[in-house]
Amino acid sequence: MQYQFVQQVKIVDMNEEIIAEVLFEHGEFETAALSIGTSVLIQQLGLREFTVVYDKREGKIARYKIADIEIDLIAQPTVTRVYLEPVTLIVGQHDIGAMA
Image (cartoon, rainbow, N blue to C red; front, side, top):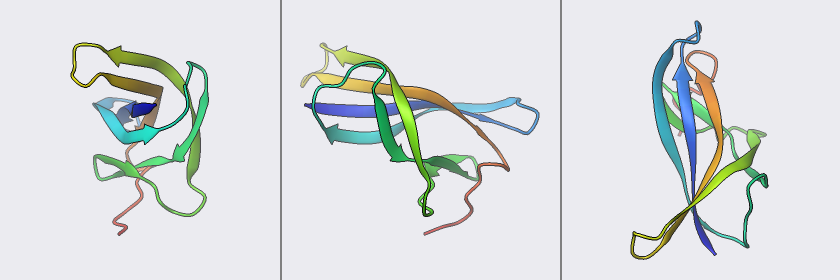
């Protein structure tokens, strides 16, 4: 089955003041049937300035649980969106720099 994986990301400063909240799209993946609570291994997220990106440095893999599964029956073709548990990134602490 084809799933679109997304994740709510809150970007905060060192004082935990919210700078931005974004819905990060991991992309579409073909996989067997999923359920809420299933763990997913995926590249860890980081910040490049105020943009959410994958942290592709070695060993930066994260495990997230599926928080919700949404099936949009209005869209054609039908879209099945998988929401991973939300994550908070701190400016200055989760910066990965200018990597290629």
